[in-house]
Image 1 (tube, one colour):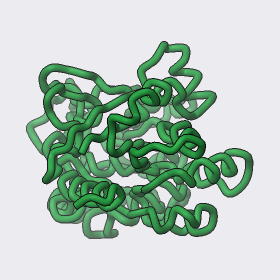
Image 2 (cartoon, rainbow, N blue to C red):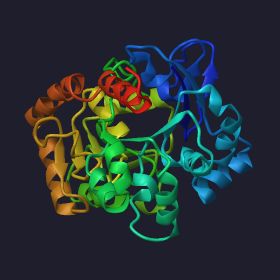
Image 3 (cartoon, rainbow, N blue to C red):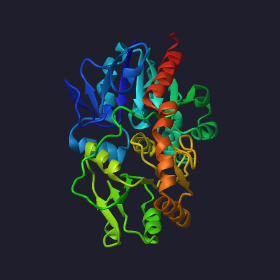
Image 4 (cartoon, rainbow, N blue to C red):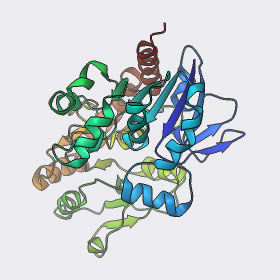
Length: 355
C-alpha cells in the first residue's frame, strides 16, 4: 500500500534524526514518518506539508483557514496512491471538494481535529463542510463527544467515523535530568499558544498566598505584567520546553470548553514526563483523565474551583506525588503512539478494503 499524508503544519525534511524536533515535525528520508513507524505492515508514506511563499502561507492560515497550494501540489499525483490521509480539515477541505466532482481510486481519510468547522451549527462554513464531507471515506476523531455533533449535522459520516485516542510519544517525552536555565525559583507551569483560558488561571492563582511562581510559557499578555508571581515567556523550542516542564512543581492546563480536539498533545507531553496536571474538565480531555487518579480536574471557567484545586496540589505533596506516580504508567497502558498507530492501521485497511 502507498499513502500520502497531508499535514497542516511545516515539516522539516532531513537525512538523519534531529534531536530538536519531535516526530510529527520532521520527515527522515528512508524511514517511516511519525506514528507509521509502529505499523505492523510497513507502508510507503509520502508527506506533503503547507510550505509555500510566506505571504501565501499567512493568507491561507489566517484568512482562508485552509490550504490551497498544498492541495494543488498533490492533484497531479493522486493516482499514485491507495489512500490520502489529511490531518485536519484545513488540509482536507479542498481535496474533498475536488472528489465531489472528480472521483479518485485513492480513498480519503481525515483526522478531524476541529469537528469540521469548529463544531459550527449554522452558517456558510457549515454548509460548505457538509457538501465537501460527503466525499470523505473515513474519519478519525480524538474526542468521543464529537460523534454527537456528527449525528446532528453530518449523519452520513457516522458509519465512516472511528474514535481513536490520541497517543503520547513516550520515547521523545521521557523523564530525564533537566537543564536548569539559571532559574532557582519554584514554579507551576502553564503551556499554550491558543484557546487557553488564561484569565481564570491567573485570577485563581492571584488569590493564593505563595512564593511558588506561575510561569506562562508560549503566551504573553500586557495585562498580566506586574502581577505578583506571574512570569511570562514567549515561544520556546521543544527541547527547552521539556526542561521547563521537568523543572516545574506541577502543570496547569486551562482549556476552554469546545466540542473538538485540542490540548491533548500538551496534556500527553506533561503526563509522559511524569508531571501532575491540574486541568479544566472539558470535552477534549475527559476521555484521557480520571480525576484524582492521573490528574486533578476543575470546572472550566470556575475561578473558585480552579483556585481550590491549585491550592490542594500546592499544599499536599503526597497528593502530587501520588498523581505523578500514575501518569506515565496510564499512558503506557491506554494512550500512547503505539496503541494509536495500531488502531489507525486497522482503520486504514478497513476503509481500503484490504486485510
